[in-house]
Each structure stands twice: as C-alpha cells, then as structure tokens.
Image 1: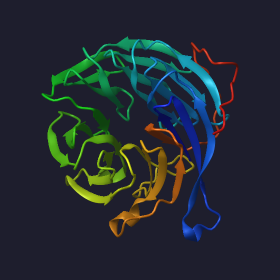
Image 2: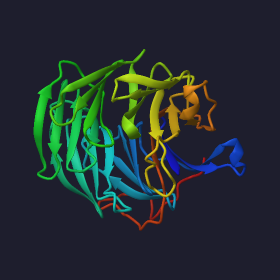
Image 3: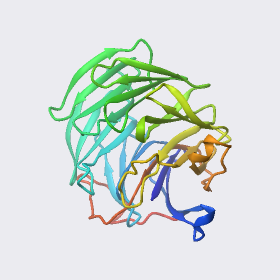
Length: 339
C-alpha cells in the first residue's frame, strides 16, 4: 500500500506502507519512495488509482506520475486556473483508470480519457471557483460545489450539467459515499448528509471547528478532520459519532485515507487502518479500532518537514504503463528524487 501527499512547498511525497516483521506488535513502517518538486507553486490536490498519481496545483497544471517506477509521466495544461480537485474513475474489473476528472478555480471541469491522457471535454458548471468534485462510484455522475454557493450535478456520459441549485452558503467539500446512495457536504464546522437520489437532508454532523477533509468508509462510516486536529468517525446511518482520535496531530488535519487490502480488494468488514496528514508535515497511520477504547498511538509515522495540503492512497498490483497525451516532462521517464 502506498500514500502520496502534496505540500505548500510544491513537493509531492510518496511512501510505501510496510508491515513489521513482528506481527504481534502490529507495527508498520512508512518507507520513502520519492519526493519531487513537481509544481511551480502550491499543490492543492492529489489522486491515486493503482500505480497512477495525479496532482493539481495553483500553477494551473496537472502532473502525472507512475508509482511503480517512481517516474514522471508528463503534465496536462488544459486547465486555465488553479486546479482544486482531481479524481480518477477506475471500474472494479480494471487495474487502470479509464478517466481523469479535474475541477478548477475558474468554474471549469475537464474530462480526460486515461489511455492516453487526452482531453475529452470541458464543462462549466459554476460561475465561480469550484471548491471540490466527487465522482459517483458508477463513473457516470459527478457532484461539484463552488464559491457561487451552489451544488451542481454533472452527467459525464452526455457531457453536460444536469442539476444546479443554490445552497445559501458556500460548501468547501462534497463526497459521495462508497455505495453512491448518499453524499455529504462540508460547510465550516458542519457536515450535512443527503440522499443522492433527491438531495434530501438526512443528518447534520456538528464538529467542534472547521472541517478540512472528509473521507467515506465502509458500512456508512465517514471520517472527518480539520482545525480541531482530531479524526472523527461518524455513523451516517444514525447521524452520531462512532469514535474519535483526539489531538491526532499538532496542527490542522488536511487529509485522511482509509487503507484497504494490498491485493486491491476492499475489506467488507470495517477497515481499521487509517492514514492522516497534517499541515505540521507529519503523516500517521492509525488502528482506529483502538480509538473506541483509549487514545491510540500511531502504528507508523513520518515527518516530511513540509506543510502538507492533501493525501491520497493506493494498493499496487501489476500494471501497464501510461503516458500523458499532451505531456511536457523534464525528460523521458525522469526519476523522482529521493527525500
């Protein structure tokens, strides 16, 4: 299993999560794979699908990487503003993504074919900055929220906006759950849970402070982190907190990843390994089962000495090579520098 983080200092970081030899201690180690000054300015978002990594930054560029070889695959320059969100669509029966979807600060959404990475269509669902984008598990729909205080639904098959409504308040995050039957939106310290079919409000989850990252888990669990420095796990079926890791970091939590089996199959039992990244530069891996009893100690920890902004994870299998359709790498298969 691998973790990839982006930072304010334009570096992207990659780590491999390796189990300890002594399994009775349940200890893990985060082994550095690469660090690479990939963007000209701050990295805003990262996504991983198998061995393929995409990062978007405030330099109006998407960069692509191969985790297997720790090499650059090139860059995409179609976005004309800061890239605020990137997401892959990978069908369950495939090892590689079919599409890459990006959102930008000018209100645009770019849809790319992933073999090779060539722009298919650009949509304009918002009049102002898009704050976040979430793909439906089917790959046919996407939700976006923006600074225009609106929620939009995109039909990715037809390549058009199919729904648009005013929220009355700006949402910073939107995420489908793993089933696609619900979605959540974050507005400051509140997270609202909605039915996907009609956007009906089911619950409002009240956090102590502003929420900066939201990650869905199995069995209706939802992981949130933010300015309270905690990792809170919610049961979206009841609208109540399940458990919480208090003071998980010394600064804001900026990214959470629920880790799955190394063979790529999702564990249908509650996943217990969760990784978190903070603006203090630290990435930690937790056993969230312990949080129901006592405050757990991290199973693994690494200090990047960077102000981290985002986190993504992947399980690596055997994959073919990808190459960007319009790429401008710094050389052919440029190796990423070690930390």
